[in-house]
Length: 528
Image 1 (cartoon, rainbow, N blue to C red):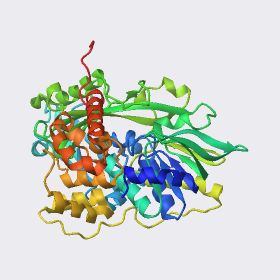
Image 2 (cartoon, rainbow, N blue to C red; image 1 turned 90 degrees about the vertical axis):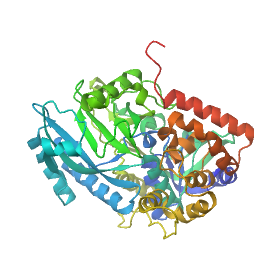
Image 3 (cartoon, helix red, strand yellow; image 1 turned 180 degrees about the horizontal axis):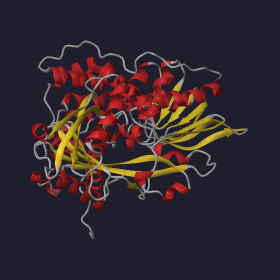
Image 4 (cartoon, rainbow, N blue to C red; image 1 turned 120 degrees about the vertical axis):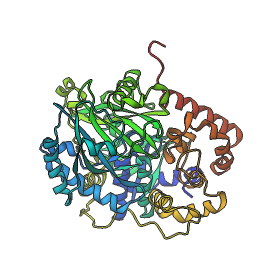
C-alpha cells in the first residue's frame, strides 16, 4: 500500500538509489513529468515539500480550457495545442475531466460584443474540429440563465470547455506514473542542489516528518516548483517569478443555482470573472493580484478580494442577493507568472501567462504554463533533460491514463460509476472492495463516498488530516465549516487506517480546523 507506513520503510532505500531523473514539485506539472518519464522506462522519482497538489494545483479555477483569450492575442498555436489537449483529456478521463458549457452575456455597449466574440469562437471551433458555440437572443437566454442581470442585455453566446477536480487529476497522473515504475514522496523539502564541477548531480532533502536529511543522486533534476522556482535555481538575468494570487468563493448550489459557467467583465476593473457549477456547489472567481504574504503557508483570501467577488455576484445575479453569510468556503492559489525586472511595473492582469524553461548542466527548471497543457510541458522538460542522460525523446501516441477496469459497483447509478472511474482509474477494484465493506453512502451533502475516504486513508499517502480533507477529497471545501460535524464519523472510519493513536488524531484535528479557519473560511473583518 502507498501510505505513511510504506513511506517510512522506503525512504532510506529510495535515497540510496541512482536515479535518471528526480522531479522536484508535486503539482500537475511535476506529476506530468514523472508520468512521461516513467512510461519511457526512466528511473524517476518525484519529491514534494508538502503534499501532492498542495500549492496551485489544488487551488486553481478547476478549468480545462483551450485558452480562448490567447486567440485575441494572436497566439493561435498555443490555443491549438490547448484545444487538442482538452479534447484528449475529455476522451481519456471521463468522470474526472467533464464537459462544461460557458455563457458569455452581451450587454449594450459592452465588450466583447456578439460579433467580435463569435469571430473568436469561430477560430476556436475550427481548432477543435467542430462547431461548439451558438448565440441566444434575450428571449431564449432567459431559459438558460434565469436570474441573470437583464438591464441592457442583448443575448448571450454559449460555447464549450471543460472542468476538473484539479487535485484528483494530480493523483490520477501520479498513479499512472507509479504503475509504470515511477516513485513519488511527499513531505520532503529540498534544501539545496548538489553540484560537482558545475553540474547538478543530485540534491539534499529534509524529511518534514522527522526522519532527518537524505542525499539523492540523479543524472538530471527537473524543478517543477511553480511559484517556488526561484528558491533553487541559479538566478541569471532579470527573469524571475512574480507570484500572483487568485481567490475563489464556494457557495451552496441552492443559493446560486447555475447549470452553466458564466463569464463576464467585473465593472470595477473590466477583468473577466466566472460563476460556475463544480462538485455540486457554485464557485465564484477569480481575482488577480500580487501575493505578498510569503510562500511557506497556505495562501488565503483577503477582505478586499471577498468584497470584489461578492460584488461580482450582485452585479450579475442581483435577484439572488448573495452576501457574506452565503459563502461556505474560500480558497486562494498562487500563480507562478514569469516576469522580467521591468515587468514588475505592469498590472497583474497585464502579465503574460507563458511558461519559461531554464537549463544548466544537470538541471532544468520549468515555471508557468497551463494545467490543460501539462503533458506538453512535461515533454518539453524531458527533451531538455534527455541529452544530459544520453537519451532521445519522442512523443508517445499512448494515452496518459489507462482505462479503469470493469468492476461491479452495485447500488450506484451511471453518473456515480463514471465519477468513481474518472477519479480512481486503476484503483477502482480496490475501491469496490471498500464499498462492499462500508457501503455506498455519501459524506454529508457532497458527492464523495465514505469508501473514497477509506481508500485515501489506506492507499494514497496521506500524512496529515488536511491532505485527506482538502486534496484527496474536497470535503473541507464542500461541507459546512470544513466538515467539522462529520469529523467523529471520519475518525471512526479513518483513524486506524491512517495508523494514528488518539493523541495524534486529536492533534491533527486541531491543526486542520485551525488551518481551515485561517485559510479556507471567510477572512477577518477589516480592522480586526
